[in-house]
Image 1: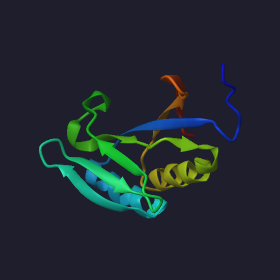
Image 2: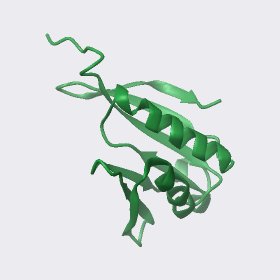
Image 3: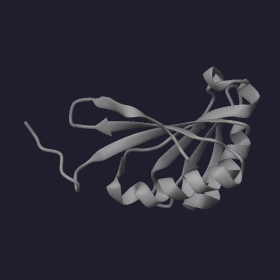
Length: 122
């Protein structure tokens, strides 16, 4: 059995949003993380943000959150604890844009991804 330490803890985050289109979300998030953006697919209006560390963030359709035009789900790459400041910058940028994000975090281990819960950013 392996032990997860602070230095080896890896996780991912999905952020559900309502109030902005996926394109608007990209224009809010990309400057906050210092990334470049491009459109993945015109059919589903999915966007990709490539962070300066070459990790890729996604902004994808999520109609479970409301109207497909004004909602989206931000999907992080695998993160570690050093990336918490990056998540704060994203949350702050979303808040300034008037979005109430809902975070769902996933812990990565060597075998599977486990949900660790959901929180509303206050």
